Image (cartoon, rainbow, N blue to C red; front, top):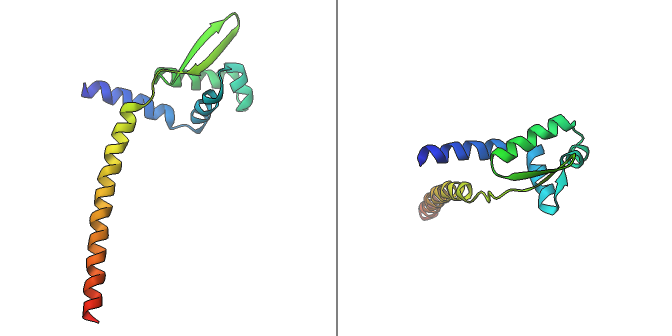
Length: 116
């Protein structure tokens, strides 16, 4: 299970690491689009956009369907729930660390005021 999650996380985070791919996801969140439309919108070649779409498909973030000569892209089934849980655990760790740091700072300020 850990190995599966590592592979899934690597694929998901690699897909999200590129600004163009994040932009494609935002665009597809508004409406489905053909690969050609996406390539035009992002000022890319069709081949370049197909590579981005392939990475997003591997991560389950995008699905495509080809009808005739047109390949239409839409948001995939991955809702990034496990990735969000993973990020949330780290956010909670950092929140706890900053809370402890705030307490130390408050204690130092209190000690400084009592010494004045």
